[in-house]
Image (cartoon, rainbow, N blue to C red; front, side, top):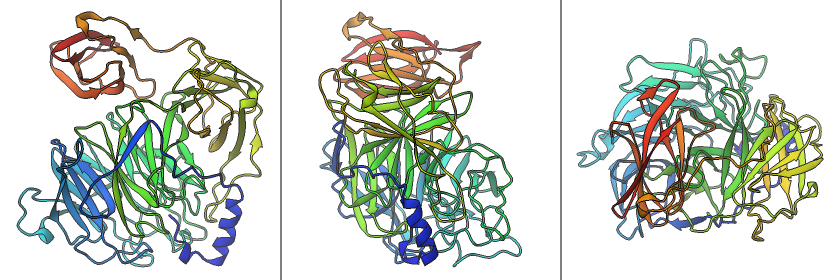
Length: 598
């Protein structure tokens, strides 16, 4: 969050000092050649605040119409509304938009559960009563629960719910979850007592609102969204400011704090005494300034990764996880794509029936949500993938980088430059890193057998809590002579792996061609998410890939087109030591099936 107009002179000095080490921003106007980006032919532009999909492919959209840019609650307006978008498939020539509820103040997220629509509003959480034939749009809602009120002896800062509301909540196993803003002052300072013992909490509440709010974790500053994996792991982005030298991407763990505090001598934030959990990825300043909603990808060529937008830096980043240990992760930050002009990405959603990502934008300006209405975009995957860095992993004695295509073998240490630094949390806005970034020399490089992975021997590139490693590649080419799409990555190196680099090719290839439909590709247990199966299908054209119990019961089914990757959940039929499933691929009436154990 940055409200430049309201930052005091002392804060501007500190902010300028922190920007001395700011990294070069992503090339925001550059489109990823792996993607096709289309403007959705909406009848108008909007300030997009929430997307979710119904099972039939219709999209539920929340928009806002605000008059303020400093975090206070605006009055209810006709343009703050919930709409149903139909026809968001194919060429979108039959697209239509229908309003089902209006006169909201500032909706901040939409959640769909079994085709029922729920909305996070500035003052609480609501259900939408009727999405087909509502009688009165301004009354088409029921309030289920309100957001926290000040504790005894505490008060709102700068107005009720000032910058404290819940963004893009999710639903899992009978409960809703969402990140609630911490207490800040104009300009982003924490020099103010917390409003309540819920300040900066990650919240949970029952689906019907009964039982009140539960604090799951704490130490959040000004989060602008969250996402969830199929196995219920919840991830949040937070915004830089006091006690937060850069934006962050976090895996929420119960009973942990994520570092935001109230500046002394104020009353402490309730979560300051909890065990600290470092972010999976620091979203370095200059690349991210106001991180927005993340999105987990469960299918497509980037299955298992996360996308992150930003409301002050047009473009989208991608985070790939690096699991080290039982439940600890490093994260690699890559440039995903630009191509949205002056529009900044505030909301992201996966289409429910089409292999597409929907992107909601606002004008990149100051605080959020602010600026002006902007278009909605749809992203689909192109036929020819880009040559790019896909993953980074901590390894014994160095760093491993995975690429989307085999490398030209003529690669040397001179093709790589590594620098690292440590983030230091202080009450000063967006400050600081310790000292100057240090060079981590690359002593040697080694390619994997398939030349899609490379090991950088760098003995000084070791892990430490909140350590960031910048990886710059120059002169890298693919085996066919293609240039690298983007040559910079940022690796948050919290945890050191003791696993040595393995040059052998990974994955289980299945070249069975029975029933005439070609190779299925591979089906392997996901290395990061427990109980998940990563399935790669190497077919052209349209097909169905599905996972079944051994009795034939359908667990999950997906539609595919062309070579693609999918993630499937294990389901509930566990066997001792693992799970047995039947994997089926069907195209043009012909089918292939084989058992998989994971």
